[in-house]
Length: 484
Image 1 (cartoon, rainbow, N blue to C red):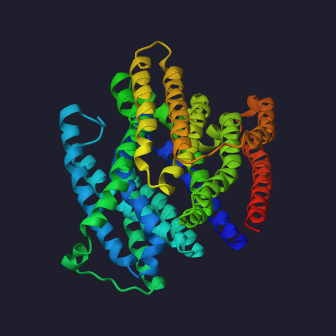
Image 2: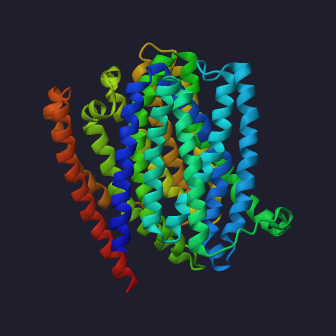
Image 3: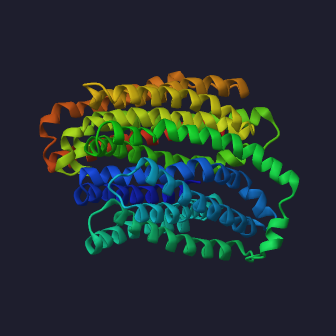
């Protein structure tokens, strides 16, 4: 376990560094309008990934270990591949219709938009299934190597594409897609090799394995989750299309860059949680004992809460320095949007941890009401606030309120399924330790200096790592004691 933590920790550090370099390069090469277009296209990809593919991907994760026992992982991956192809074709028609009717992503050509979305949906979701599967099966080093190389080559190919064809959002994404395609194929070949399974590529034979009972199980698990993830997309991504039409691409670019930086920091941490804690969680909930599943969630939350809280406070307190390091000069004045984004992502991470109850109890339909509540609040507020004088600060505030509503309703709903509690004493202790980050406010006047920004980010970053290691070790000791 300790070796796994070290390997994944090093991998996440490398991947986070690559991600932050990517943000910096995007902010340098692309104008604010094309940053907005880039994130609008990402929002479209997120819609199809979250609503159409993610529920199936969650089902795959839930079944991976049993498929491995039956030597049917590769066979089922082929089924999954056919499904992603179908979703990609659907995305092609939907994107075209929306482009020609309401003019989404206004400064990107129709053909380019349709091609990037169609191929992007396929390559993105294939990569995000096959590469993490290596981690689920315990091949940590291979997982870290393939993940890091895929991200590194994404930047290199995107920069090459922009220098060859022009600094446009769709051109940047072209490099990302090519890298995803290459490394999804390499990862699939490696996974097949280490699992020792055959390809089992028989089109008719593969589909004949889907009986009515399996399809019913699949529908019962995936359809409610598809509805809830669609609502999640409305909650977290749809605001971009409202702002594009109601305000401007320039403001959307600045708003989105601030939220994007906070989201990437949060996503890096959330990915670390998934890679380190989720394999054990999925293993532990494979039990018929309700108490075991309740205990599994408690252990998951006890280990995840400290890093979620400290990441949020760190991002808020150090937002001027983060924008100086990760953004270009045209975004410096929008540093405060990182703080708004950090709070938005806090509620997202907390909601995601709580929602894991629905998977352990196979009650994914319970996610619909929380995300519906948040989506309605967020959409209504963004539409209203976009037409106000102070929309630059009120729109992100509306996003926070929507996230908070989702979290509150989610907690109430999940408690009805499984008796869960949030350790408030732990939260208080973590918050107390996190207030040290606000010492950085003394040096805000130096946030324009790269040297000062790097020094403060590094020093407080070491403190961030130290307190998280402390809380993680305490949680590990508590877990080990409970298993005795």
